Length: 104
Image (cartoon, rainbow, N blue to C red; front, side, top):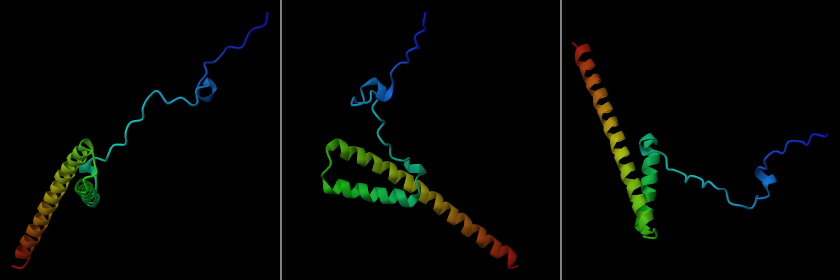
């Protein structure tokens, strides 16, 4: 009695369906979180969005998506600017206090 080799399931190119579409659609590429982006990159993307919206070539759905992304970018930029402004005020206050204390 000869033992037959165990058959392995066919996968990949061996399955004969190399031309078939994958069963799982690839996830669409997501834009980076606006709050995590450097300020300059967020402003640059916002300028691009404004240009796209002004061109009027986008579908309504795409225009709404871009508008929503733009609002997120504006909010993130505003937050970064406010934090920078507070930091500058703190630094100026610290410098003014030191000048007064050290000059006496």
